[in-house]
Length: 167
Image (cartoon, rainbow, N blue to C red):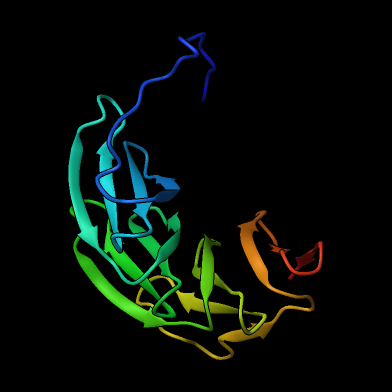
């Protein structure tokens, strides 16, 4: 159970381990930081802010999700998503997705990626990154961006049309 505790609102800052940090994921013990300009992610222990490693992913990474065992990082500049083992940051695979992917969500079985330049979603099986059946789905709006799973449906924010889509 999460609890809110009063704290010093001034906050504490830690180095991100890379340049231009722009997305975060929590794996239960560590924060994973996406470093856009350096094409990598940093694993930081939340207890004390210690850098546990920085791991190369792809060009212009900008989205990240945790699936319970692995970290998935969207690489917008290379139209791929990279799967890292959360325990040690080892690369388990890099998989092609659509044009200029930006964000990722996990639904318990699959990883979903928004593809902004071709207005689609890509679905990959989380266990191995494989495309099973239909892998690309059109989004009925312009430039899908953020994505979340609500337990039943995938929701997508459509940056270019001021709408959200329920898939």
